[in-house]
Length: 313
Image (cartoon, rainbow, N blue to C red; front, side, top):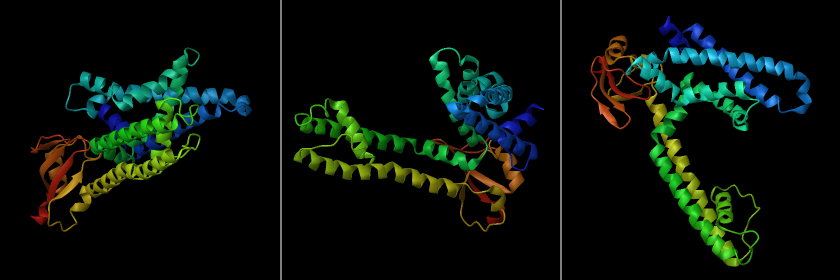
């Protein structure tokens, strides 16, 4: 029973009607909860406050049940650790924290301001769709794989922002002491310029300042293109890896291919996959490691399998 419940609430198997119904049901619940949160801010809809409260309590009650079930079945989500550790691991995971933050406000809305601010956390419940559909999960996977490059590009942006803000403050402070009062004013200007937002509330008036602004604006175009190119390349790589194993059997594969391990195959052993799909798994790429697979090796989410079908050997 526990495994069946796990398959329904965690995997999101489209071939399972109950699981698919749960996906639709929980999505409607999340959207309804967030919609009520927005509509409660309109004074013209105050006469519907009673209905909003009922919907809010019902949806939060559903969240509570789902939260308890996810803790109860956490052992299947993290099969490599003990049940107690698996539950702790889930509680400290992103999904576990978001689940908790979306439940707490319902019980403390009349308390401190910090608890009322947690209502905003309900929006992050939409990230739960990542656990349901692999197309959404591709985004988080790409960001995770390219995290080092993205962090490096953000670091370059921060250096350019700091340098340009100090330079602009030095040039414009005497001419506009009320506008460029300190280095932070320069940072605000450099952010709007480098990221091509261009608010126009702060701008240089001196000749040297305008020349510098032109150069910094051109640098901003290139700086924004760096993380964009990294993420775009990551999407291309990810979709190339994301091949369906069931379709590989009918293909004439003459070379070894990479296959992305999504939630359909995560948790299964190498032996189970090889036997079910008539393939040979030569290597498993896991984070920064290369794992030589054995029959009892358990595949994890976001692993990359190096495989070849038996018919192509």
